[in-house]
Every structure is written in C-alpha cells, then in structure tokens.
Image (cartoon, rainbow, N blue to C red):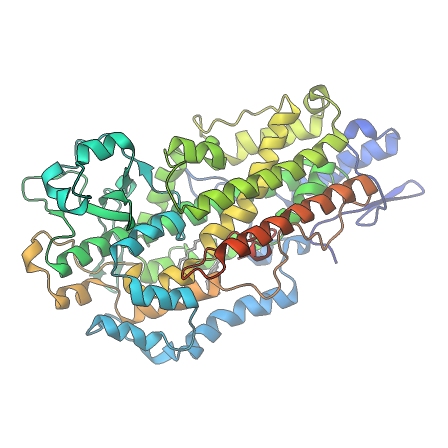
Length: 577
Ligand code: OYP
C-alpha cells in the first residue's frame, strides 16, 4: 500500500491513478493529449480534496480538516501506526503508574529528589545522565549546543544595552589572565536571548496563574570547562533592583535562575523550533505538493516519501495538543492565548535563509565553537541530501530554462510562497523558480527540515525533559527578585506540580521515543521512482548515509554523553510524530 498515489496507467481512454509503471515525467515530457489532460484532471481532483486553511492568523496555512478523521485515506496513518500512537500515551501513564499521581493537581513535590518518583520505569541513559548532572554549569551550557533546541545560541560581540553585566561581575568565571572585554573581542562570549518570550500572556491552570519570564543568559567558552553560563538576567527591561544572577551567588538562587532559562527554552523549543519550524513548515510543502504536482511528476515522487503522515500528526496536534482545551492548556505555561502569540511572533521573523544550516551557523557566529555536534552533523547531512536532490533534479531538468518553463513547478512554488507562507514579506523565498540551483536548494531544505531538523529537535525531548527540573513545562511562581531569599520551598512551589510533571514525562516519552514503524532517512520502502537512473541516485544516497552513520558512530564511541540524534538510521524519512 502506498501513502500517496504513485502510479498512472492508461487503459483505453481511461487513466487509472495508483497503477502506473514507469518513468517520471514533467508536463513537457508528456506528449499524448490524453496524458496531458489527465494531469489537469488529477490536479483538479486533488485541489478539491486538499485545500488550504488559515487555522489561525499569522502562522503558516495548513490543511483544511477539522480533525484527522476528515483527511482522505491516502493521508491517514495505517492501522498499526494509529493503534501504536493511541496506545502509547495510555501506556506511558499506566506504566509510570502515574494514573494516581497524575490526578494530584496543584500539589507540589516536597524535594527535588521526589521527581525520581516518576522516574523509575521509563528511562533513557541520557535522561538518567541529566538527572545526575543537571545542576552543573557545563551541562547547562552543553544543552544549548547539543540539546533539543540547538539553534538559540549566538556569538556576542557587544553586550546588549538592556543586559547590565559588568566585567567585574563575571571576572571570577573567566580564566584569570583575561577580561570580559578581551573575550568578547576574541569571540569566546555567547548569548542566549529569550526576548521573544517578553510579554507573552501566561496560562491560568485550574484557577492558578502560571508565570513566564524572558531571560538573557551570557555564556563563556572556557578552555577547559567548555561552554558555561556566567550571568543571567530574568527580565528584558531591567530596573535598579533587577538582579543579575551569577555562579558565585547562593547556590539555590543560581539554580533557580538557570531553571527559568530552561523553562523559557521549553516554550521556545516546543512552540517555535519544533511545532513552527518543522511541523508547520513541512505541512506547507505537503499541501502544495498534493495540490500542484501530479503523481507522475519527478518532484512529486521525490517529495512524497518525506511528507508521509505529516498531515495526520499535525491535525492531531491541532485538535488535541494546542487546541483551546488541549494538553498545552492543561499543563504548559504558554497554553491558552500565549502559544499562538508566541507562534505568531516566531512566524513574523522566519527567514528561508535560517533553514539552510550553513547560513544559520554563519549568521549566529557559531562556526568555530567546539563540540557543536549538532552543527557538524547538520552540515554533513545537508551535503548528502543536497547531493541526492541534485542527482535527481539533474535527471529530469537539463537546463535552468526547463525549470522556469515547468508550469507545474511554478504553480507549486507559488502555492508555497503566496498561499502557505501567507503575509511573510521578509521570508526571502521568491514565488518563482528560475534556476536548477534554486530548485535544488529548496528541495534540500524541505527534505532536511522534515527529516534531520525534526529528528534533532524531536528525538531528544525525553532525554532532556524527563527530568522535569532540567526543563520545566511551566512555572507556578514569579521569578525571584531577591537572591538571598531563594529557598527550596520556593523552588518546589515554582516547579511544575505533581500532575503537570507526570504529563510532561508522559508526553515527551510518547513523542520522543523511537517510533516502532519508523522508515529511516533514504529508505524508500514505497518505490515511487522506477527508472534505473533514479534508482542509482537513490543507491548512492544510501551509501553516503551509511558512511555518515559509521563516522558518527565512531565519533561517539566511548563518549559519556553521545550525540546520536542525527545518525541517519535514527532519522525518520518524514515527520510522523
Ligand atoms: C498529538 O495521543 C501529538 O491523544 C502529541 O504532536 C500528543 C497528542 C496529540 C495528544 C495525546 C494523544 C503530536 C506533534 C507535535 C508537535 C509539536 C509540539 C510538541 C509539543 C509537545 C509538548 C509537550 C507537553 C508536555 C507537557
């Protein structure tokens, strides 16, 4: 069975979709009037079934469906996937014996070690590592490079005017022979600025107001300790009393300041990096592809396997996760109005450029920072994917002119740029494709985003979030203003309550665990292409992925904290979860 229609067959004067042996064809390659009219008929039919919907203003458009039940059969999970998906969250709650704990609304844990009570059946080696090391500054720093949200950190050349750190404050964190000024110049100072959280309305859960802050965190690439935080401010607009938290502060104050940064990370990670930048972006290409490219088109055949199940998972997340009564509303601080406002802010500043790893790392000034495995693996994966895309595109397009004259491809890019990414003048993606190179870059971005980037953000979420104090999904008290007044009771009343912690654990497991029916990157189980030249390009792609796999495995051997989210065998071929 195929997810999306894939063959076309001529029987007398009838065309039967689903059953066509043979070669991919652009519109200019089809010569028989019947073939050409079939392309049109097929697209008209598809455009009736797959329609754009603005689910909310100011975010990408999506598929017009009230729930997954409205989707055509071709876009649905198969039975195995469906029962696994539905069963897995139930299983997590049961298995953790969270059922009873999950009902403890509003009840705080008594001590940090109590979080262990939900941490005994479902575990992962990195989640356990997190539990044992989460308080360490270098572990905190490491997560900005190789955690689930590895794109927040930028080189800091000059301190922002609203972040009043002085050289004296941070001197004791630096090696003695240097100064903050000198390190800023040398490029060893980095900034995580969570300004986008500023003023986001916080959720109210069971009548209790939750809290949100918009921290700034300064980091230093220490020659021995690696990347470490050296100063944290929890507000964007400081007044005289706004503290700057430092590693030399009372330990609980410093720990709580770091938790506030990690709490903002959770929101930005889930709503912007994960939902917006992978799920919703991939959906735009999915809808445009189904509406504008007939099944016989080479670019349809190239993309279809990378778009499998994305419509259904996104429908489920709109109806159960981010809806007004969904899981976000019941346990996350940006649930309610906040998450849409946050997504709209993130959408406004999206750039096509930032989806291309090379530019992303250059623009953030992080091309030299050490042990940035996410960066290194992303760059290698991009090259392998681009090589593959280039091989396929070159089989079907002999010149730039052939791209420019492919009316179906032009309708496709127009649908993407004008309909999907509606009202996004600064996105930087033109509504026409003029060259092979532009087409290759765009298709590489689509495949990279729906495979590698999704894996890098999604697959580690249990590892980094299962130990709830390391990445809290909500905060129940306002940020501290007096460093000397931070107590353990205050921390416990701030962190997620028992029931919220259970949900965080269960959902991140549900989404982050390896999917039982996963098809790994480059495995084309459903054979869309049949011609030998295309199969050869696919073979080469697999070969290069295998070499990359071996490289990554070798690099990680014996590492205490391995980075395996981007090893090709663990990357799914499309966004299915
Ligand atoms: C859809 O199975 C999805 O009924 C997950 O999300 C969970 C449900 C529905 C509901 C549970 C069920 C699929 C795909 C996605 C995405 C991006 C955002 C992820 C946010 C995760 C938030 C975790 C919250 C922890 C408290």
